Length: 164
Image 1 (cartoon, helix red, strand yellow):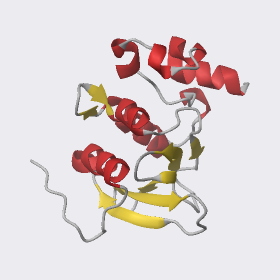
Image 2 (cartoon, helix red, strand yellow; image 1 turned 30 degrees about the vertical axis):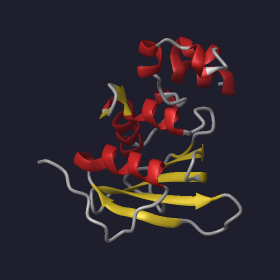
Image 3 (cartoon, one colour; image 1 turned 120 degrees about the horizontal axis):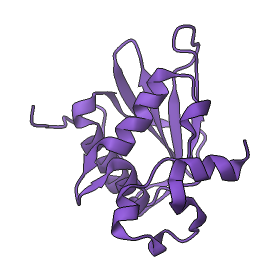
């Protein structure tokens, strides 16, 4: 499967549009990650993808659409697909981002033992990644991820209040 066909299956008909500003608000709200679900074997990775594509963000769009609006490059997604039962590494999604506060990469990594996620940021020109939030659960996932993108960082000990 070629890169173009993977992008086309991930973004649907919007994949042929190189300028995202040409999309209608409805098309932009339904933006999909450029990952073919047929090629993914990890259920945890599919769960992370669905979390981004289905959770609501402020403004009536999905978390993924809000991430793209905030500066994530939609065609620069890389992922770590692992065998859920015998994995040495955890499933992960990594995005290239250029926003007001983050110029580099954001990685969302699955923690199957803790049944949660960690968010790491690597700024342009740096070798190390900074874990900005760990033990992130589904209920506060969108809020924390978008805060990291908009603010640039969150201390790991900074509480995030959510309604239960």
